[in-house]
Length: 417
Image (tube, rainbow, N blue to C red; front, side, top):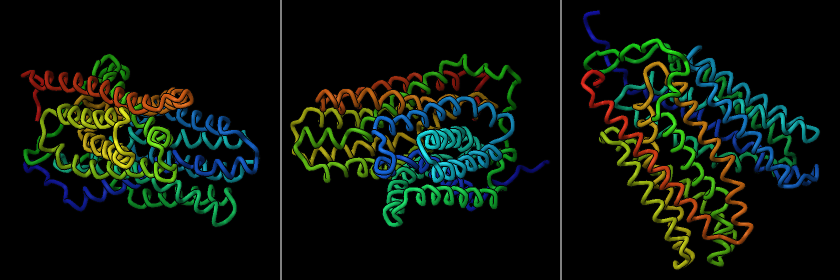
């Protein structure tokens, strides 16, 4: 009682960060459970791409609504049991998809995958904030973001590869369920490293975090910073959706490049984003005004995308610049997550992250049809101009959040380390 608790060892922090990274990667993997199998489903059932695309809308609507609500559950019962339930929902989704005899079964699989995906950001960030020491928290956020990108990148290879090798999309779905079950078993085995009810020591000074003042569970919704963070996620996800879904065909049409080459742009974008997150993990612990880092990185990425939209570049250079724009997004990622932590009131971490990250699901749900309509009308440059504009609007939201956090920190009564 008289001595302050020692800082957790690097090994303990790395263990928690690694487990959360694995769990987050699995959630992004299940974003892509069905899309790589669309050609196989069309061959067997004769569905149209619009019918199959509706499955993604179901996923993101369920995930978005569930994400906002699951934050309350995380704050009430703890993050660890919710994490176990989410992974169990992924297992069920894979099993239902693998045994589906028609469209209703696929819809149910999408609903279960959306339910599983919903709690991940409140869960992940609650555990990271409670279990990882402050000086390594930025690296935890970086690994969290990188693992999500790796989950996106792995799923198409895993699902389509197994379906092609076995000649059965059902085997691929069941293999996805088996993978989720393996991740769940790993989490249960290492459950002590995920116990958010046992927070790490505050640091060298031994100061505990200030106790949360009891208030109404919905009081956090009155905070402008929460809705500004929500809008930041909405706009940045609109930009990501444009690149993920339509950058390849837009580059093909604008620069007369083969689709086999332009298809590499999303992979390049994701790899540059992952590399940027590594850099961002080192920056976040050294910068006080995080919104300045976010603004500089996102504006640089927006400038690159706008340059591509002009259509003046050689095709290979345009492809490279779109991929390089991902680096700015990646560098800004850990600063973004830390800014949300600073904006969240004590005791409402799960609720805030759940509400804020539901902007991500809304962005995916809204942006895809809008940018798709632009591409259908032959407005290829609008894909990149629109993506750049969305990043600029995201910068405005982040700047306002950062100003609010700085003003709050400057108040003598509320100043805390």
